[in-house]
Image: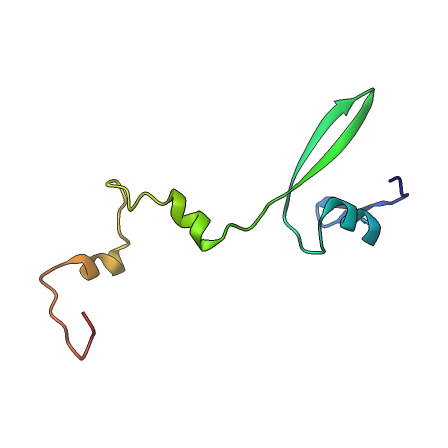
Length: 93
């Protein structure tokens, strides 16, 4: 599908307005996050929009490998891991 569009200034960058039909054909909606790449094909530069799919909790968990040994807890959370800290109220432990 070929449609005419316009490159417009957007802050220190530029943007391209995509029609509803182009968004639908690409499987995108307004606000979609995409990876943008360029590729040369037959003497033309082609812009490739690769949708970034939001991972489900199950997908995120599948790659989880626990907290690394080199992780340093922020100073305000260090006491949470300490066994010497006694409850001061009716915390559930």
